[in-house]
Amino acid sequence: MATGIFGVAVSGLNAAQAGLVTTGHNIANANTAGYHRQSVVQSAATPQFTGSGFFGQGVNVDTVVRNYSAFLDGQVTRAEARASFFTAQSAQLAQLDGLLADPAAGLSPALQAFFAAVNEVASNPASLPSRQSMLSAAQTLATRFGEMDSRFGELADGINSQLSGSVLGINSHAREIALLNERIVVAQSATGKPPNDLLDQRDRLIGELNRIVGVSTVIQGDGALNVFIGSGQSLVVGNQWTPLSLQAAVDDPARLELAYRQGSSAAPIASRSLQSGSLGGMLAFRDGALTEARDGLGRIATVLASTFNEQHRLGQDFDGAAGGVFFDPPQAAVAARVSNTGNAVLAAALADVPALEVSPYRVTYSAGNYLVTRLSDNSTTSWASLPQTIGGVTLSLSSGTPADGDSFVVDPVRYGARNFGVAINDVAKIAAAAPIRTTVVAGNTGTATVSAGSVNPPAPLNSNLQQPVTISFTGPGTFNVSGTGTGNPTGLTYTPGADISYNGWTIRISGTPAPGDSFTVEANSGGRGDNRNALQLAALQGAQNLVGGRAGYQSAYSQMAGSAGARTREAQISAEAQDHVTAQARQTQQSLSGVNLDEEAANLIRYQQAYQASSKVVEVASRLFETLLGISGR
Image (tube, rainbow, N blue to C red; front, side, top):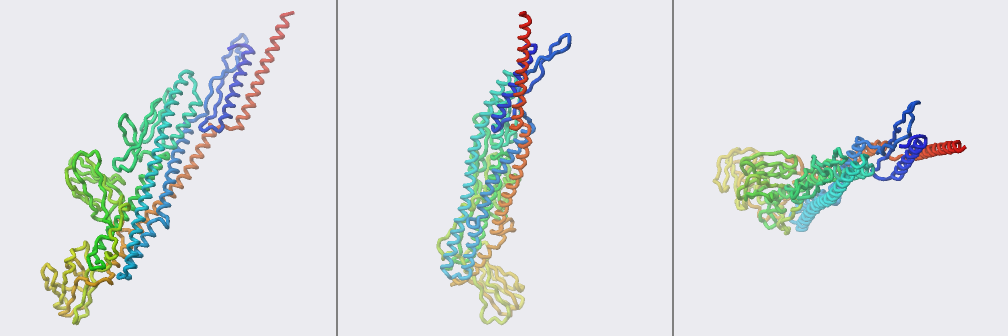
């Protein structure tokens, strides 16, 4: 560096010019996303020693730095990732809540209309228009189940579509970050100075990527930044990046999951490890609220069809035949993993409908045991053999032998709403009557009365119900039975109001019979006006047949809708709160890294004055030099 007054002045001019350029750069990028305010770092030049002491030699411009704090930027990154998570989740939950709570398109109106039609048949069982109304309401209910399940499917498809877009965005950002890593390493190794604008570009890309899928970063010694997602999977390492893809889930081919590409293979990334970013929010919604709602609706449809069919089969139709199934019988779905090597065929039968759970099961054959995992909470049960019953479903081997490692997924209720349908199309097939009737034999002298009787589930063979049975009292406390088809019991003890059951039916005799009194149970011929089974069908509306016998159809659906509403509100509150946290973190970060135009305007004046002052020093030095030249010329 030149010495003397000229050298000092020139160094001052250079420093002031560097300050002006940097300030102008800050002002120009005041609205550039991800830009960090830059500052000139300068230091006093090494002084020159003379006999009179050390004389300063001006100023050095050491470097230009970003006003950057890894801690503050990290706070913003984490806050934005969580905000994106809650925003995405809240938006999806709002759609689900709107569907379940819709007073017109929800399930409640269709359920109420159907049971209102059943009650109408119970009030007028011989009316063909009433029966047609019931059949039409059943068709409407089936359509509503199908429409809602289809809407759930559309929400799932929408998630899959958004996941595809997110994966494209992740891969694009990862590629750009790897390229910037390479440029930064080259620039920094060549100059020894930080390439601030390149660093800002990389940070901006990290921020955008982080809003899609939460990331963590580690800086290398050469300036490259490694990026990790999920539970530690490396997305970018130096100038290398690993593409992500989507693949069908092993347990549910219709559900896409994020996969980490490694050569020609892909390893799935557990959805539960992605707890931030918009992608994490969508996965949390799909695997949580949406799956539970779809399974919950399927359970209502499955239980309704099963219980209604069971009661309907205990009745008698318009033509006197035994009642058949009213709704299409529900079935549990079983899917074998495509990589199974054994030839076993697993069967799943609905055994205890009120005990059905809102969760699929994975059945894995391992070391001679059947490991059954409930996928909703990953609890596992081990059995040495089949058949066994879990969650209201009996699992058994239909045929074949499983190989070690073979796996099956059992969905007891997932497709209940989709497959819900009406099995009859003839109003005469509606079994509103009971297939038996009781009579008091003429001439009875006691005060005993007999109930109308009911048929015991499961529905017995029709021939049993056609067989007349006579109960004859030999005294006030004993009776004989004839016509049971299994002998003629005699001398039985009579307890007033106690159940008496034979041939698949149950009656009650109350009061005091006299010796010789008789009562008969026989087929209900000509019973078109009988409404006893229709009353039992109507009573199912209030029966507690779900959630282990703790809820009815309507209350179970209300619980579903209420849960969705609560989750939606919770997500909205979390999103609002996280937005405030993000704003505060960004404000703190901007107080250090943001461009303050007022401050930069003051810096312009300061550097301008410094430049002018250094110019004045040059002018003074020039005059002194001219004076010296003038003296030497004399």
